[in-house]
Amino acid sequence: MQSESIFPVLNLPEVPQQVRESKNGYEIYDTLRKKWVALTPEEWVRQNFTAWLISAKGYRASLMANEVGIKLNGMTRRCDTIVYNASLKPVAIVEYKAPSVVINQQVFDQIARYNIVLGAKILIVSNGIKHYCCRFDGSNSYSFISEVPDYSFLTGSQNS
Figure 1 (cartoon, helix red, strand yellow):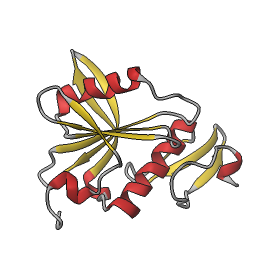
Figure 2: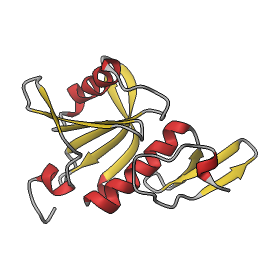
Figure 3: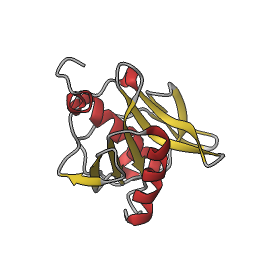
């Protein structure tokens, strides 16, 4: 099955994905959750983006988690991906949207609300075509940075 025939080519290096057809439609293997999940446009972005973070940016799969539940204002929410340092403190949050979804202020508001709970220093938003990254300075101020940083930047060490 050609995944590209279902979903568009993304603005990411091509990484082979495990895709299969099931009775409920197509599924993709999530290497972080170690299970097959429904292949939606957003999931296509998530799997390709996390693979890129690991292969090109030095992120450790063992320090990343997909679909993490958090409590926000008494309600359970799910963060698409959280990146941790070696002490398991969140250092980055990634929010994904389908390639057809325009990234707007509402998307940034969503990830900023998650960061009230998590306190990560980097927030990343991607629809697979456009990627945005901003740095949180700790005083409710965010500034955009030109590219997604390497993992060593998040941890402040070249050996993390």
